[in-house]
Each structure stands twice: as structure tokens, then as C-alpha cells.
Length: 136
Image (cartoon, rainbow, N blue to C red; front, side, top):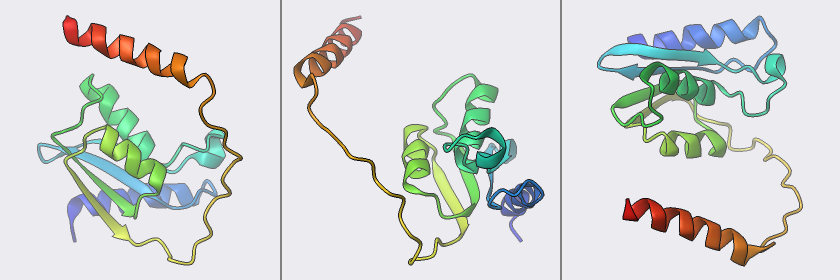
């Protein structure tokens, strides 16, 4: 058995006693585990407290950098869209996961969405920021 997925499974088992969905994640750099976490949504009352997100936070703190481009993530369940986006944002090099999400899993309800509110001002703020950053 893969030692890193085994560590992710151990983390997932820790979640069971807390009434959390048993998902565990570890982040590996240079052959060593630098972060591990399990789901903590219930305990922290935080909808973003997925194992992957928490492991990414711990790894970034441990390395003093949000860029985890030389790190690999092992997680026991296929990441949700939020976690997939965070994995990309953290620039994680490789993702390994165990179980696939059930195809018939209900998707979360989407909120009513309103777009383009003060679009020009929001766009200009971002453009100014990146223009100044490039000129440094």
C-alpha cells in the first residue's frame, strides 16, 4: 500500500469520531509529509474546512509560501470543485486520490447570482493593481 495514501486514510479515520465525513489529506514534499488534515466542517462550523483546504493551509504555513509547486497531495476522496480550484491555486504539482465521488451525488444548491454590479469600478481596480505591479 502507498505510504502516503495510508497516512491520508489514517487522517480520515480521525474524522469518524468527530461525526465528520471521513476524508483525509496529506501534502508531501521531497518524500516527506509536511501537512495532514481531515474534514472539520462540523467541528469548526466552516463550510470550507475540507481536508484538502486545511492541508493546503498547513503546508503553506509550514513553508512560508502559498506556492506549493513542488508538493503532491494525497486525498482519500476525489476533490470537490472548491478543493480542485484551491489545489490549482496552490499550484500543487500532483494530485492522487482514492475513492471516486458517487455520480448520483446531489449537487449543492446554487445561490441566486447577480452579475456586473459596479463592474467598471471593480475591473479598473484590478487593472490598476496589476499594471502597477508589472511596472515595479
